[in-house]
Image 1 (tube, one colour):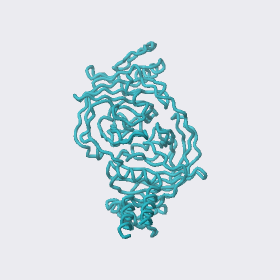
Image 2: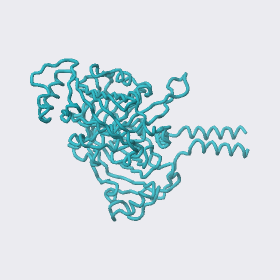
Image 3: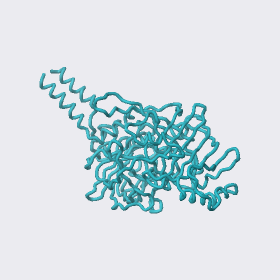
Image 4: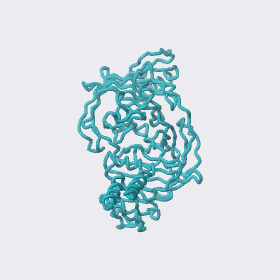
Length: 490
């Protein structure tokens, strides 16, 4: 009997020793206890959890208040710096929002109509007043040319109206302002374990996902979102700790939030990084990402796990890519960012459902692996065909990237990679380098971890094109079941 208990303990210990990167990916595939609120309930205040970066770049924080009568008041605070400590101006946006039906384009989202009643601006420095007034006077219509007469002195706290539905005046175009983000809505809730060792249990965290902002400034005024931007969190039910949440929720247009100072971190890419949640990109792409960077020889490996659903439970295909990257240099356009060039030299694809298999087998000969040879769960190298035309992969390929590293409030390392162009193109030239970021990746291993055999929970034990079985750590429950069988047999 002692022997069997020892065996059971050994099996449990082996399961617990699963590498943290795989634990995180399994956690994501299990949806991490996330529940979507359908229809979404918006009532209450929602705030940024930190300094946000929009294409341009624009640095801002947001505080949105939704009332039970469908009216809303949104505050957007803009800054000169990427730490959101030097405010430029604030926008006060008032209007009405009406939720409609579930989106036919973006699964899990709800479409909405909004109407703006008025938008006001408060300048926090003479410089901000001069620059904004100049843009409005030069680029807006006839009704806006006298928005602020030349030489007008700065009046701290003064509110200037830039949009009024009543007078049909709209001077917001010069600011690149639009609230199309309100046309796509999703609310998620999940439980966060209590961090204090003396406490057990968890607390509810609610997140509000609003439509994404087009990466091309010229398109943002007309763009209808199909993806999301960085989520807001409920002012009452947010992650802990979150110093920025309280500061932003207490701010107003006359007293913009000044976020706590944070030490700048050197760019340390070496190690492994993984998604923190199921990510959504424009054109309805749901995915998780896993990267390993080898700093000693500047090579990298990336796994992109694509899904058909917003909880990343239904896999469609996986892409493995590798190559090398350049030495980073500080970005001259996006303060706090680092510019790098990434060369993609090899890639492999694993279709995970029959729809993808059919698409790949129907592709033109020589354009995506061996024609007609694709099957679900079996990986195939696409390097010899210079990529895969059906999936938009071109090899070899160079991308001009923007990276940033930070630490969160729990001192975990985060990696921000440049936001992909909204139009689906690639940043394949320096002038297309991103000026904003995707959702952050979290560091799951400080040193490189061999990860080439991971495919999916649905295909444990399947073989790849080379006849190598794709093994994966067995779930804890299965190992315990085996141990119990040994106990009963004894």
